[in-house]
Image (cartoon, rainbow, N blue to C red; front, side):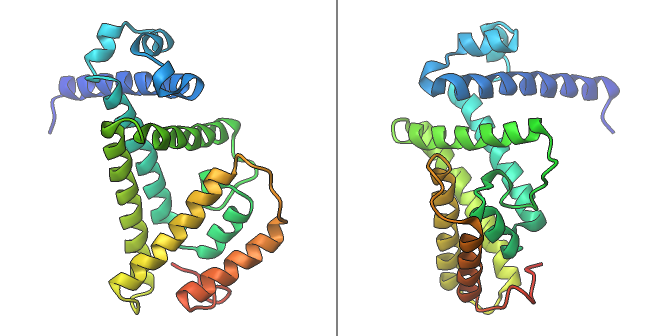
Amino acid sequence: MLHPQLCSKDARISARRDQIIAAARLCFRKHGFHGAGMAEIAKTSQLSVGQIYRYFANKDAIIEEIVRRIVMKKIRLMTGNAHNLQQVAHNLAHRRIGNLSAPYKEDQCTEQKEQAEIDHALMLEVAAEATRNPVVEKIWRDSEKALFNEAKSLLTATFPQFSEAEMTAKVESLAVICEGTAFRRMTTVHADAEHLEALYNRYFQDLFETDLTTRKLE
């Protein structure tokens, strides 16, 4: 059993890291990775630059932690209800990317919605930065691989009849739709959501050779 003082120390370290990450998220969202320096993050977090360096080696380390947290959040959601493709079809049709993995709640608090929007914006920023920064590129590739493998594992358990190669192709197809929808959140919605949802449901039904109306992917 850990000594109470050690637990208290770990809690303080965790709280301080959370404080820095919260500030960095706001700075990166507002100014981008290039525009937001350590001085800006320190000011927003009400800490000194020296204090920040006690918890993160550099800005790339902060970016890595932000991406890790976003990916872990997505994985937790995926292990809950992401394998319900009817729900995924509904959320895709309504461009509810922050909630692709869980039923959308109309009464979801404003803060949660704002955090989901920041997550989405930051991941787009990471994708752009990955084209310029090899460290961020690795962070991006590792996070994408973790999400892909988690989705593949979940769907393989539900549809064991498909070979590994077949399932890999199916998950890649799903990833293209999800990522494409995430990107198109920035554009005008041209199609009716009900028509889109019907198309997505038929596509998923054909993709996995099952009747989604009678078989929930659980």
